[in-house]
Every structure is written in structure tokens, then in C-alpha cells.
Image (cartoon, rainbow, N blue to C red):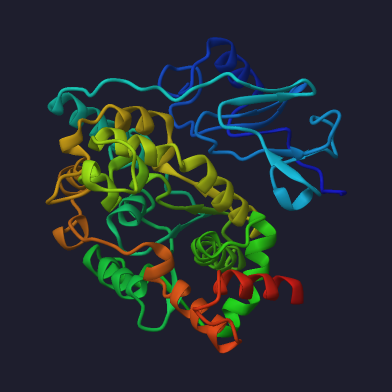
Length: 389
């Protein structure tokens, strides 16, 4: 399949990536091998395809390519290939196959005070709220749902517009309005209300961009794609978002009491959070490809190397307890950034539920004859929409 010209590398230059691979350093931004703000890399380096340890920059090649590094055999987007196969995170792909070069560190838990200090320093710097760096530039918009993650991101871009999407009356739009007012940025908020026609129109684009048609991935990726398209139409080519916060900082309910939760294998909070972190590469393939299809580049402060390194060292009590999740992250929000408690302490629904996208796609499926008693009724409807398009 022919594709437009693409840069050979994203996220870092060739010299930095060579040094990183030679040193076997999975988080080069922590150790001065790359810039302090490095947050992943990927692409073609010499005769190799490379991808960072968390897969923050997806890279694909044709399944049957004799030379996966040939110009027409690899891409940053699965939509540009006939049978795309992702380069594994931390991996190098050549004509001889795949080799894992980088593995995610498993450091022991740090002392609570030291761990909290490291996370505060890393996040303050990544968000630009400590005045050591400025992140507020004119080509950035913020995906804003009103939760602590997106509000922290917004704090690093004080002049950026805040975009939220969802159906009328949904949780995310209400939360975004409340949070924007609480931080005195109500005038920056741009609301896009979805309709059923919007869903029908967007589903095939999401499936084409991500290479996925299962309901979970489609309903997660669709609101992000719509936000990215709206921001791009308004002239913004970068979108700041809170990717990685839930995984790295203990945002999921399943990590709170893992010994009693069938959704995780570990019986410790740190182990359960580690399992969540290991799901990031697959999620990022979906989300980054959706943004790229809209012509927008992601800006992800929580996925910078220095933040990842600090988060991996958090003890369980600073990740999740029966009383609170994302304990350390919320402390940073309150104490370092000064977010109001209504935002710093608020819980938030997952995007597919908070926007009502999952609910309304299910409704459309049933209206079109795909009843809930049928196996994968929403998935069948999604595939019909894709075939019709």
C-alpha cells in the first residue's frame, strides 16, 4: 500500500536512540542520555525498526515483508499497511526478526517521603508549574474532562483552549464545566455535544485509524478522535492529555484490594499497578494512531521518562488505598499545583462511560436490530458501519 512520506524517527534523534539502545537504558530522559522531557521514541534507525520500552510511539511493519525497514514496508500508522504488525515495546525489528533490547525497570519501593518528593519534582517539572520549563505554547490544546488528570495537564498550559466532548447531560461535560469554573478557566472551555449521526460517522474513521473494531477500543478512542479533529479544525496540531496517569499512579479500582479482585493476578497494590502499566503499549497504539489520523500530535506529561521512573518507585500506600486512589498524584494536585479539592479529590468515570459514547452506541446497535441477547451485538453493529462506509 502506498503511503505519504514520513520522518524516519519520532520522539528523539538518531544519536540519542543509538546511545539509549547501546546502553540498554529504558528511560534515557532520567539519566541524561536524552532531553529531560523525553517521552518515548520510535521509527527506523539505520537497518532497524525501534520502539521505546512503553511503546509510547507505535511502529508497524508488513507481516510478510522480507525487509521490514523498506520505505513501503513500515509505518507509524497501521492504516498505511495491508497487514500491519506492531514492533513490540522495547524491541528492535530487522529482517532477522524481533529482539527485545529494553525492559521496563522494577525498582523497589522507595521510602514514602523520598518517593513523594521525587514524584512532586518530576510532575512539577513535566507540567511546567515549577518555572524551570515552560510548556505553554500557542499550538497546543488540552483534552479536558474535568478530572484531576486533565486538570493537572491544563495547569501546564494556562493559555490553551480546553476541549471536552460527549452527549448532552453526560458526566464528562458536567465535570469539565465545574472544573473549568473552579480553576477560573470557564472561558477557555470548548464543548462539543455529540449526536447519533456523529457516532455513525466517526466509528468507521476510528476503526480505520486504529485497526480495531471491538466495542471497548472503539468507544474509548472515539471521543479522543473527535476532540482531536475539533482541535485540528481550530488550528491546533498538538493535543495535551492525561494518558498514563491511571496506569502509573493507581487509578483503577482493581488495584485497591488486589488479593480479592479477580481482574488482577498480583496480591499487592504495587504488583497490580505494574500489571496496569504493562497494558500501556496496546492502549497507546490505539490512542496515538487515532490522534495521528486527525493530524494531531499527542503531548503527554505523565508519560515522560522522569515521571515514569518516579511513579515506578512509589510504595503501595501512595498509589491506592481503600479510601483513595492515585494518592500521590492527588497530593501533587493539592500541594504543589494548588488545585481546589473539588477537582483534586474527585472521582471520574472512564471516558467511554463519562461521555455516554458506550451507552449510545449500544442504543444504536439495538435500534438497528442487534439485540443484547446476541453475541457481541455492539461489535456486530460496528462492523456493519465499517462495511457500509
